[in-house]
Image (cartoon, rainbow, N blue to C red):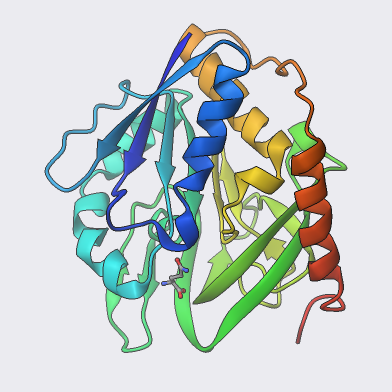
Length: 251
Ligand code: GLN
């Protein structure tokens, strides 16, 4: 299969080498005989709801977010239609914030978001930085853990009843107090975890790929054939141990 990936604002949103997530998807798709075609979607580029099997939005600081926020928000109908039509989506940190209703910065400014994820974000006075360990809250992956690194001033509050990506075992997560991290809507996942995220959470890369394949074929998602993931598992274990050494959720 040829899988079509739309990479939103690659030149603005790529903090902590977040584009590494695409490299992981490309390699893991190729190992199963699939080709990933990555197309940048940026200011002035059209985005057709049916054009991609997976959409990716990386992280960026407030300055970069402000540069692309109006363009991103103007695509709310196309993004909603894409996700309603079964397109997979991964959004990290700055991208995750802007896919919610919006982000209020330290200076009180309001960046209007896409409204895809049921949340709102407000910048706090301190940054939430460090290794994170989550228990997956995805029904497709109960018992799995997710390891990563967070660095954000924004506190993201999920609406009541919203589905998080995970429950915080160690680290801050969405807001430092709810115990939730990330958000999930249909086949769209948002998270604060950088690092990049997918090299040390190979199962999550495969889940996203299985969703992208399901979109491409119109069939139900099927688990992918396993790969030898010794290095990926070792990377996950190192990150998980560092997060655990923080001693649970900081106050
Ligand atoms: N605006 C974000 C913040 O809360 C940016 C974080 C990021 O993408 N690292 O700090």
